Image 1 (cartoon, rainbow, N blue to C red):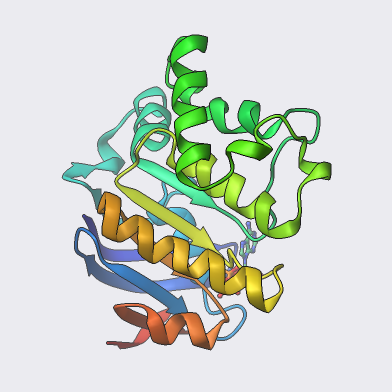
Image 2 (cartoon, rainbow, N blue to C red):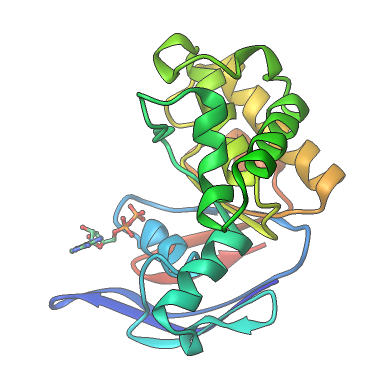
Length: 219
Ligand code: ADP
């Protein structure tokens, strides 16, 4: 599902990724751990086509993303990849339902279709009762689950999450982690999760340890 080879990346004179090779299979849940500054977020951003590597190739679900033109790339990203960040990044003036509809709209769905899919996705995540609430009216755990619903609406093959439970308390953390495993089991999605949470890392199928721009352990 994800194939990285020879990925390097520098910011100015600082080389942040020093040659990353990585294969992730369909339906795998992989955690990326390592000290702050190791390059985890940069790697996730490159994997998600939000940033470009200086060298190397990224193949996602059979498509070599380096070859896509800017417009094709944003359509590809919106269709194939769902993102979940530490802070939910929901738009405060919109309801949960409207927030979840956004990626469907960007993909060209009609408002009827986007609304239908957003309702189904919220329902699937047990959030039907919260559809008309704005983010400020939701708990931390609910906001993060709405963000997951937004990541799921286009049925992407891959979900990339950067410290997704970093702002949650223990109970909500466990619920969110369980949700990732349920989604993989029910929908077959592939997850790559950057995390400091050792409990989560232990639960994942595989843990990639990064140190100073390289993969030090992969098991
Ligand atoms: P991690 O996620 O492991 O903490 P990051 O990938 O966020 O590491 O960052 C790795 C290094 O790259 C850090 O030293 C960070 O300051 C630097 N860095 C990340 N993004 C940028 C950027 N856009 N411009 C300049 N430096 C950056």
